[in-house]
Length: 421
Image 1 (spheres, rainbow, N blue to C red):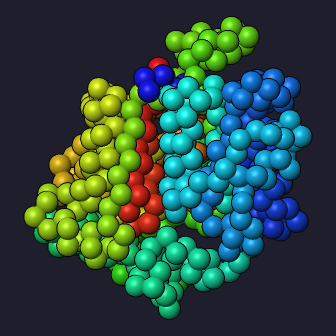
Image 2 (image 1 turned 30 degrees about the vertical axis):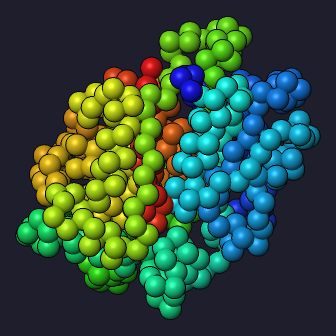
């Protein structure tokens, strides 16, 4: 299991689109994003056929809840609807709530490391604008312990991450005004970064610090405790593809495309931990620990250990900012600050686009959008862009190593990957 895993590239859909209004389904999304990804990477469907004859290629689909949003399960088999070249190719759907894209990545990486396949197509997809926001909020509640935390609760997840904000304030004895100002700055940064990203959902939206701080009014309504609309990620239709390969295939690919293998990034480290599913159990377990989300921190440490790297070696981060409070907690989990001192890193500009440790130059879930099953795959794609210097207007100068954190539920399922040359 020592085989190296390389990332050849990929593509995402424009997260601003409403596919239902276009009269299109999740199948349309899968077809378009896979066609675009293969073209971008330079792999043809004939090449897929060739690899399939030798059982060297597989497809991994990340999706959270097509059963409810689209009345359809068994998404792993729907790649056969994309192109006949995918007939016979092994494919399956992977689910871990908002970390569904990452569990698909993890399965693909594991199969390549085990030398089962040479090429792995990872496709994350979610169609969410098929229902109203209140119905969709109830669907998302199944990523928590539905009977205990979400049943009969309007918009359960803002309330759960509002509780995280409460615990941060209480445990670290922070001044509320300073803490809330830090959350507003997280929102401002993500929206500002998204304006540089041509595929971001909010790239044309208005947002500034003053708006993010004006909580509780008609333009920024409260949705969960202290959290308001500007603290939330978006409801998004979208898909993303990332293509992974073994070292042997990457050598073949590099020769065909004229690239140098040293210029193609590889997965250097990974972590996967699962915390107690209810937020209350997480809160109780973490009493006495300096980290409120100790299993998130441990996932990061596992990835650092496997990569033989530390926070000082990471040039760019993509994190799961489903809410500003989750990004706030991630700052110390990464090691950028000590627990309870995250606000200082924010105030000093450390995580801003031009800072020492930029977080979410893409715009993150708040700015890019959050098609649940696709977010982990999109994060990996953005790390690829950063470390290959192909991120365009949101390129972090000199990025060599990138880290992504993708979580499912209220920081229940935690995945971390480190990508670099």
